[in-house]
Length: 488
Image (cartoon, rainbow, N blue to C red; front, side, top):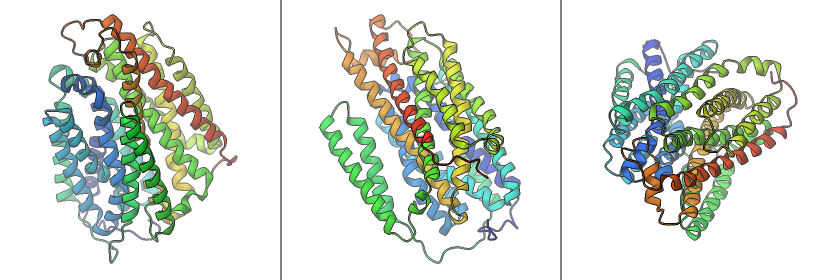
């Protein structure tokens, strides 16, 4: 840690710490893949199609807002205390989500989960940096990435099994024993002693304006198809919040996101690329299962395997990043892979009812390969392109960008889906009838299914048309990267 360690490891058994970090990484990362598999059943049982985007957005929003707050708290109160708090809140949120009797209570419980995840996810990397030397760190991070890969592999399978054999409630309950186990490991095995700042300095106004921006933006997206005037007002609130955030960060001595980092155009491109591709990621993770379950009547387990194939390729491809960066200019790596993704999604927006199921696997695997390389490269370069004393902040900005990309686009996709569905309702077809189709557990045939299925298909086409637009934007941004040399 640049000649100075913030934590003493004398009394720590590092295997205990890594076990806790490994399980925590698995627990928080499996949350996304396991919930997306169960989403159609949740929507159907709780009659929540109109609010379906909030099941993911509430979790991602609170995660995004709290991540920089926990980063500051960890420097003052200690990693152990903040990490333990995050694990407990995340576990509580999981338990409440499983008990939720209505869609609104589920959304609130998911927000509580996100408050906990905001501490757990970034602090796993910080704890590794505190307890392992620079030479050890690369191998330890690679080992910890296998927890993410494992969660991506088994998450959809576990989620599909629980939905098919028990109920969607269990996709949340399954995290409760894991959270308790992590809390026990941290409580008994992680002893922290280190240098602390004499006083807590937090950019409160930066946090407030960041929250105003994110909440205003997401609410605007949620209301854009049903209350356009309200949405316009919220967009203005979000714009004002963003402007005040920029002003605050330039003036505050110890800002949440230092403007100095963004002086490098290549650094900024890494953040924007990771943010946009994370938005693409949430698109296929949520809407591939919905497409397969509602129109192809594939089981939750079968639909989950599509997301799993992507995750396997992501994990395998990420091991090639070091070799690729050493041999090729980053911009050309990104442009090439994003171009391949673009071709796959252009084909998808023209897919009809005869589009083969295996085609979804191919597109998902292309996603996993491309994003596994590009987003891993974004992470490495964003840390490399800033001064040593800003590496932690750069990592936080990247994490926030990825959370923001997923949060915003979860709302955008939901708004597009709902708007296009409502636009096509006619001849006695109601929104409630469309809601019934989006489920893998249709015990009886749905009336007018032949009429409703094209409505759902058109809405899904429009969702992935938005993905194509995003990929075009990120392709152009990387093409404009001024760096034309291999980064060393």
